Amino acid sequence: METLHFLIWSLVISHRDVKTHRIKKTHVHFALLSSIVFISWNAAIFALGNFLIYLAIYFCSRRQLGMGDLRLSPLMGIYLSLSHEEFSAVIRMNLFTWMTAGVVILTLLLFKRIAVKSRIAFAPFMFLGVALETYI
Image (tube, rainbow, N blue to C red):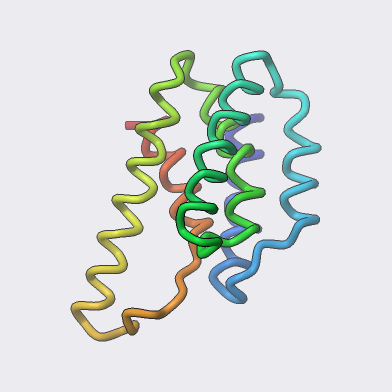
């Protein structure tokens, strides 16, 4: 059931983000609301911890990280808590997220598909980070 939830919301949210560079509040709210059945103390800690990491990034980057990505960060913590018990998984998941985004951005820059100041959809990388940490 958790995997199906993850797949549905990763496709819905990522598709919208790729298409419009926006993450709808209602999508995130419905995803969070429907994930209540998965909530445990561990999930709450992972969700809060991941949110605080992204909040720090948001302020350190002078608000260059999108608000949708910030809102989405607790959901990533919830998903990760379903397969991991130690908070270090949150750190590894974020490393996977940022490294894969970096590789894709560098590749796109190398082949001149984007400019240096281009915006990218980050939600797909967030979901990919969870998937890589969970299944690898």
